[in-house]
Amino acid sequence: MRIGYFVWEYPPRIVGGLGTYAANICPAILDLGHDISVFTVNDGTLKTREIVKGIDVNRPMLIDGSNILPLFLTEDLRRWGTGIKFFNDVFIYNILSAAKFVNDLIKKEGYKFDMICAHDWLSAMAGIMIKQETGLPFVFHFHSTEWGRSLGGGSETVLHIEKTAADVADRIITVSYPMEEDLIRHGIEAEKIRVCWNGVRTDKYDPKRLATEDITALRNRYGISPEERMILFVGRLTAVKGILNLVKAMPTVISKHPEAKLVILGRGELERTVSDLINRLGIGDRVKTRFEFVTEEERILHYGAADICVAPSVYEPFGIIALEAMAMEKPVVVGAKGIIGFRDFVIPSGHDQTGIHVDGNNSADIAWGINSLLDDMEGAREMGKRGRRRAEKYFTWDKIAEYTIGIYEDVIKEVGKK
Image 1 (cartoon, rainbow, N blue to C red):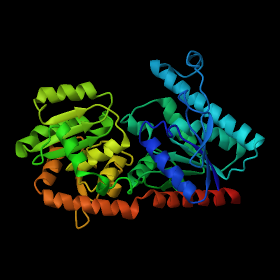
Image 2 (spheres, helix red, strand yellow):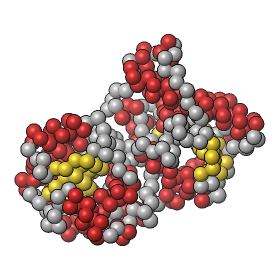
Image 3 (cartoon, rainbow, N blue to C red):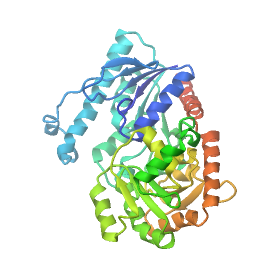
Image 4 (cartoon, helix red, strand yellow):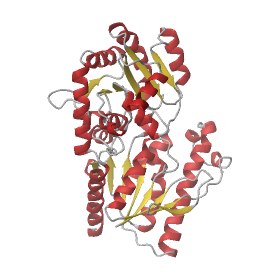
């Protein structure tokens, strides 16, 4: 089949999990024999169209209409302030992508598309417009929701875009069963929803690829000796990731396990708050921060160097960080209360246990989870090995692509019968 693929992030421009998803799923779909035309944002330095590893990548060049948009947009958007420039970019990207897809690729170049898909609200408007213009089967992917990202609030405009896309779409794909339940609670039509997990490159996320001397050098960078235990947090420093409660948990962890050191790797709006909290608790010698976006290879090295990985999120639609850690044979402590995709793949007990479930809102519970692993590091390492086997069995990108294509094919058949 030929697929029109609308996604805000795509290599070489990757900001977060959505870009990582697109960078992996598109080549996997291509390998299954399908054609993809990707429409993504242009930062002003990239080609407007090129073939990248067999994938037709389109990046319409944006223009700035942020001075005009507030004249006719809702009060909700006027309150975005400087953020109106971001909405402008999203809006213009969607308009130009939809126009190029319909007018250039279909009408001018004669491309015959079987379906379109759009990912999150950032590309939803293009999907809505193209569906109405062409009638092509439309799959809308919910990787997250506005009410979840904002912990119950958020922009009324974005909420409206998400709901409209869900109503217009022929099928909805989301990334975990907790997300499916949440979408239904918020009025999304249950019959439309299918769950398809994210994946991981187990060939790339493989501890056997790392050199011992590189791991030692990284641990030395943070002042972590072979006798000490490196606890790793990777992610955005934002409220939904539970980072502040993790820092608050560390005095309890350190009091029981003085050999423990926490490394925080990531960026976000809570950087200063995290630093101030570490200083206030007097644990600067046991908690090391690195407020950077590092390369994927360096992130993999951090997993390899860690003894335990912690992701105490309070909202996490899927949680690819924990899956990456599992592929790297690391035991994990994950938030599991609320809309948390970790519950789908981190096994918290029994013979198949791969980690510990905690309440990311409760620093005492986070400390208990970390201490539970530190109390029995031999058992924790066995959890890590089971996590690796689970990732290999269920979460490779070829398996995820096959399942995704199966959903797409069902939608095409269903729409064709109407």
